[in-house]
Length: 186
Image: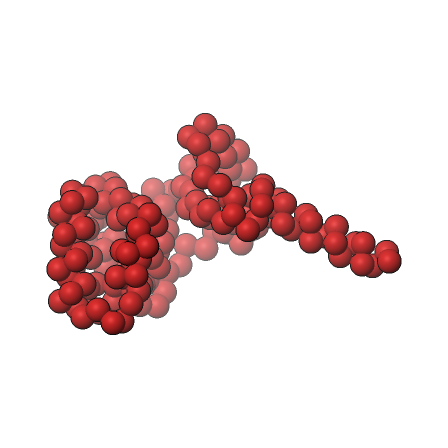
């Protein structure tokens, strides 16, 4: 199997590296990861929060005020909260999703884990997530951290990207293959 892509680059990579090194030096990688994951969950669930993060219309002060309210309500504090405030003050909050993804890559590399991007048509239950992790662990020999994205347009099945390897068993892809085969036959 090809090696996993564990490099991070660009603005998001620099911020993620800074966050990771601070968390490592403070021996708080687990708590920072938990807070960052909690924020990512809030971002995925709330269209208003996503709009606040992406939109250049809001000033840094407006974003900061709203972010403080979200962090307080979610119970996110410490290094993760301060980091999100720095992103906001530097007008870089729009890259937070990329920063979170890059931070997860750095944590996985540090722990000797692999990270897989999984796309599914509907959310997976814990039993299915555990089975998928176990299957991927048997292939890689490493614990696998999953970044799960829900995309109803794939209709069913799943798409797994692990390093440079991708397996697409989505119904959308299978139906497109059948459609192409029928065009060629006709």
